[in-house]
Picture 1 (cartoon, rainbow, N blue to C red):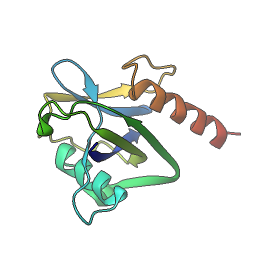
Picture 2: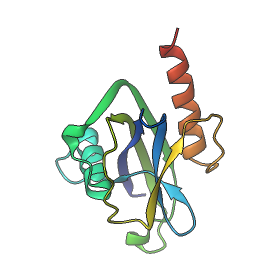
Picture 3: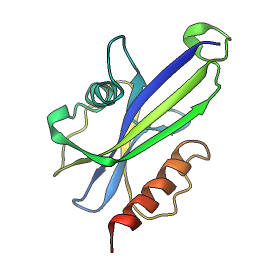
Picture 4: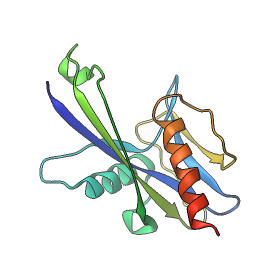
Amino acid sequence: MRRVKSCGVLLFRRQPELSFLLMKHSHRFDLPKGHVEAGETELECALRETWEETGIPTDRVSLDPAFRFEETYFPVEPRFGTERVEKTLVIFLGWVEGSEPIRVTEHQGHEWRLWRPPHKIQKYTLNPLLSLVEAHFAKATP
């Protein structure tokens, strides 16, 4: 079975209100993410994909070194026909300051979703990721 890895960043902003970035597809929401290229680290991939899909320069993203989400699942990967693959998804937590403009390149749009947990956006990946972020924030706030 082929193995593939995809990495991305869950981006938050504090202003005008605490919110996180979702990318819009025709039938679902997603995060800026993509496949690791040869010789690239997970973090390099995540930041490159964030820049490519949002236009936010990597030097405008501050990463939380204490957070890393990983999930493995077995989807059919279109670039391999009908073949199922073992796909590992790695998501980092990042912050952008101010109102960084979003330049959508691979999606139909974007949305800054207010941080009002619990979130029920997508049963797989997004909901578990956001639950872990909620717990992470709770640990960081005395």
